[in-house]
Length: 112
Length: 109
Image (cartoon, each protein chain N blue to C red):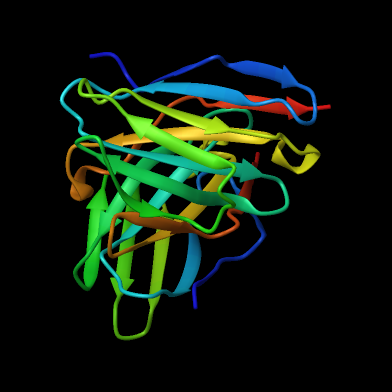
């Protein structure tokens, strides 16, 4: 079966712009989480959605937002981009905790 | 507060056994995950422990002690392809995974 699909794979944006990243979970998975990965901070939790509801949120500013659609696909949006937002953004989906979270290949965002 | 500690780097020889330790301190606890991440790739799920004890899965085993806030990942019969970063992650209530910084394992021939 298809894995977690994230688009686009690479993105270059200018400071001050906004960006939308997309994630399609594994079919049947209703939980979708987003993480930011940087060399200095490692993997940090952004937020988690289940059945179109945000269930949990990490310690990121309000410029980071997300949503989930009825087909479980999820998007995250970052407004007013800063240089420090350059990172690999990973999406993960899960059916149940014990099965683990399956990560997508990520979107590498570069802010210049 | 949240704190996940694991060694930064380890080196081991092909065919050997290596143990990667992880200590955690989180707000609520709902299980401990181990992931493997090769450079430039997404993390891949290795194991999940929620009860104390050892879980074995082929060449990989993972152990958890909830009372000590401690886990380890044991890799046997090391292969060159096992060279990667190994991430320890504790799940807090609310399905939030808190990751350690990762342990870079280098397997030498």
